[in-house]
Each structure stands twice: as structure tokens, then as C-alpha cells.
Amino acid sequence: MNVGRGTLGVIAGVLMVALAAVGHLLSPPAFDPPPLSTSPQFRDLPPQPAAEVRPVARTDRFRTETLLVPAKNETLKATIRAPLSPGRHPAMVFVQGSGSGDGGEFTQQAEWLARAGVVTLAYDKRTVGYSFRSRDFGLLADDALRMLRVLRGRPDVDPARAGLWGVSEGGWVVPIAAARDPQAAFVVLVSSPNVSPLRQVAWALNEQLLRLHAPTGVRDLLTRAMGGVGFDFLRYDGGPALRGITQPVLALYGTDDPSIPFVESTETLTRALTESGNADYTIRFLAGADHAMRIRGGTYAPDYLPTLANWMKDLPHTARPSVAIAGATPVQRFEAADVPAAPWWGGSTILWLTLCLAAVGYVAAPVTEMVVRLRGRDLRLQARMEATVQLWPSIRRRLRRMAWTGLGELAAVLAFITLIVLFSVNQAGAWPAVQAGWLVVRLLALLMLVQTVTTFAAVTGGLRDGWEPTPWQKSVLAGVLGGTALLLLTAAYYGLFAFPW
Image (tube, rainbow, N blue to C red; front, side, top):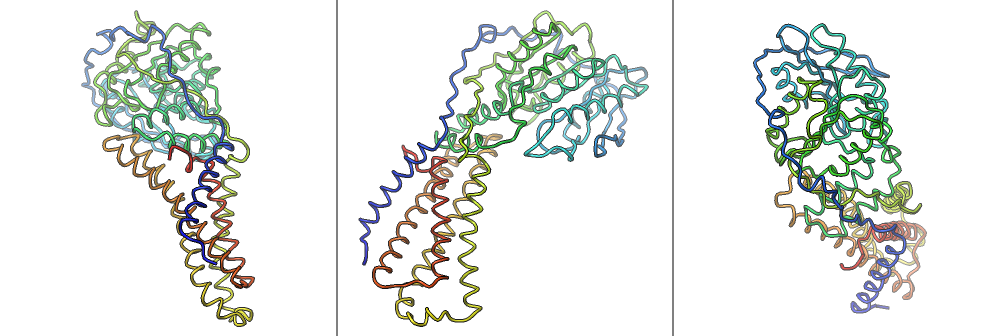
């Protein structure tokens, strides 16, 4: 019994509508952060005082020292750059942002500051107790304090002027360290989120997708995936640590930073410091600076290093400036909102279980066929040779194409997410690439659906015409069709069949 292409097209269309409805019913509430109502103080900031950005004399020669510092469960390499001029100098420990890395990323800043008369220490981030899935900000804070104690013990460092500097994720680490050690002289926060990690990542995702002009469905896919992640550190509340800071604070933000909700980050910081009675804070917004205080990923913003050096070297005079918040006017379009938590069926455990089951189904097909061939001809296959010769090769080709399409869909989704990450750094030419990538992902999902319908129709027609598949053929059919069905349901949950298409 043959089914016409028109009928198959109608069936595929009905199933696509059904999958879109299933995805809508199973999905968590939509992530739709509201526009931010900016408080009046951020609408027209005063310019940064000229004394803060005055030229810094950088005439000191410096030496570079490398040492190993024992930490919990491992030893960390640290690099110190110290001016050769006599006397005791202000000093600072660099605390890294997220991800693995070494202290070499701070070389340019450290050498600039060393020539300006500041001792700096940059160290490699720990690898034990820090991973993509799990991280302990308190453990990282202990590492930073160990490095600070190394600096304070040097004869060329003034212990009363030795403090901590943290960027991005370091903005959750440094406040913990400062609250634990009141002897830390100061705190510098660069691109510090201050909101929870989940809110920061969600805000950054929304902001970057808006800048990339990505379709709404891209945000739905990524936020549904985020909602299913069960990493405990994503819910970290940095408020208590911020309220524990008693030292002078310098916070620097770039107005072109797509990763930090800088207005809400500033409000969170000032509110926490005010609640604890700490009025010694200086917050500056640097025009055109990005997350790393650079201009479009190139050179540092002109006022960044002078502001940092002048503030540190002039303490305690600069601890409480004439104007607390100044610089270029920041524009934050949307609030930093939490991603809705996924239901149990949208959690990462269920996702991985689904993908593993689909993979098992795909792998079972060639393995089963190989085993049968090694064991010799199937007696039932010989008995029904005519029907099998006519039907099975065609069905087997369809099943192979289905398996390759399913694997291709998974690869396309991973490649598309990588594309989004790359373009979040450099957005030149992003729009056509993002649109094309999203179209490929959805077309592959549609192709999986069409292949499933046509293969199922071929199998059904064969059964009605008298074909009796052997046990190993049944296992191959169940594996590939079942695996693809799981992938189709997963694609429906993540909105790949949603309308408008």
C-alpha cells in the first residue's frame, strides 16, 4: 500500500503543529525581562573629576619574580612585578574572572602599574575545586587572601596600602575576601556583576542576542536550556559579602559592556554599602569600554589605568570623593531577571538521559546488523527472501539517513551556540550568520520530522503487503525510530517547531 506525497505532507504538517503545541505546553514560563526604569541619578552623570584621570608618571624600572604559593589541595604559581625605586609601595592582587586561566592575562596592566610605582601580584587560578559545573567562591577568596598575605610580607610593600582587585566573576570573590580580612586596604571591582550569576548570565544573553538581532526563538532555546541547569553557584547571593566590605571601594564599568547589567550592579553595590554604613566608594563609568575595560577588544580605555593608579596611590584621600558616581552615562535597556526554572522534564538530567537513549537507539541499529552478519544468514530472512530483498534495503537507507540527520541536528545546535558565543565578542557581520544558523537548526528538525513520517509510512505499507520483519530488523526499526522520536520531543520542548516558523 503506497501513500501519496500529498498525504505524507499533510501528516507531517499535522505532526509539526502537534509538536509545536506539545512544546508550548511543556515549556516553562517565557523569559521576557521588562525594560529597566532608570533612576534619575543615572540619566545625567557628572563628568569624572580631572584629578582622577591626570597623567601618571611611569618612570620606575621594575623586576619580575615568580614563586609558588601553597593553597588548599594544590600549589599556585604567582608572578610579582615590583618597582625598583626605594621605599614601600602600594600593592594589589589581581583576581581573575570566570574560566580557567593563568596570571599572564594581567601582564600589560601589571607592567603599566609597576612603572607607576605599584607592586602587583597575578596568579594562576586553581584547578582543584573549580570547574564548569561547580565552583566555590569562598575557596577562591581564600586563594586571594593567601596572595595578599604574600604581598604584605614583602619589604617593598606598604601593608596599609595593599588591596584586592577583581574582574567579572572576581566581583563575587573579592568581597568575600575583603569581608574576611579587614586588613585588606582597599577593594577594586572591575565589571563586577553584584547580582546573582544566573541573573548576570541571563541578562548578558538577552543583551547580546538583541545586539545580534537574533530571532526570539534563539533566546527561548538558550534560556530553556539555562533553566534546566542545576549548578548551585548560579543562585549565589553576593549581598551579604558586599555588606561586609569596610574598606574603600573603587568600582569601574564600561558603557559598552554587553555582559554586565551595570546600572543594577551599581544600585546593588551602593545599597549594600549604605546598609553597612560604608560611604567610602567611588563608581566610575568609562565611555566605550567593554567588559575587559578595552575599546572594542583592543587597547584599554584611555582613562582606565590612570583612574586606577591615581585612586590607589592617593588613598586615603580618594576614599570618599566629592562625587560618588560619575563618568559617561550608562544605558541599560532591560532588567536583570531570573530565568524561569525548568520543570523536571526539562532538567539537565532528563535531557542527558534522552540524548543517551537516542544514541543507544542509533548505535543499536548498526551493531545489531553487524552481529547478524557475523553469525550468518537469518533463517527467517531466507524464508521470506523475496519480500525482504524488495523492502529492507530501501527502509535501511531511510533509517541511516534518519540517524545521520539526528546526529547532524545535535552538531548544528552545538555549532550554533558556539557561533552565538563568538559573535558576542565581535558582532561584525553577525546578523546574516545568526539568521542562517538558526534556519539550519530548524530545517534539520523539520527534516527529521519528514524522514520519520516517510519511513513510518514505508514500514506500515510493507507490513500491510505481507512483509514480516525478523527480530533483528525489528530492533533496528525500534532503535532508530525511537531515538528520532525522542529527539523530536526534545526539539519541540526547545521551541524548534514553534510559530512563527
